[in-house]
Image (cartoon, rainbow, N blue to C red; front, side, top):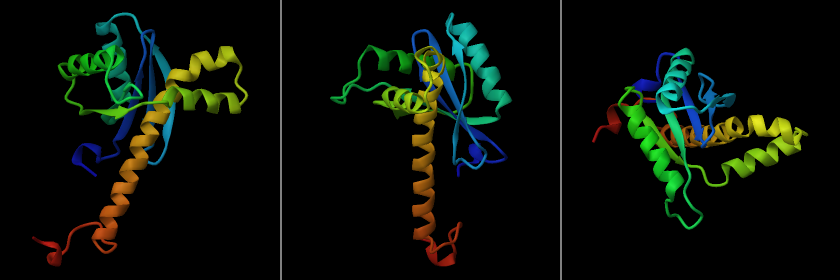
Length: 166
């Protein structure tokens, strides 16, 4: 894992909406995404202050932002808003921000909440953080598969040995 994920750090996932920011945070083992309460959007400076305080409290080392790509692979106005949000956040924080294709994450999150028998009213308050958890879980699963592939390449070791030098 990169150094910015060492020392008990976590990862955060965000689902940016017009009215709310869905938030999820990983466990310290980078295996599971846990939804957090949504941040109600007001204006960027207030949203950023609340978000940065939460990221600090949760000891976050990097943030994955859902990028709403259209089904044909193009980027529309919502994707541009997400990119602008990250540009603005990057001026306030040294945390690395990465984009993650969020296609169908809200649909998957809503289906899960329906299966869990949440009422429509309860789903409305949880959907954005559930979508953030789906986004973050995708990132965590990818990190796990990359870590597993690296260990396989290294013959089960976690660090390159003398025979692995180029």
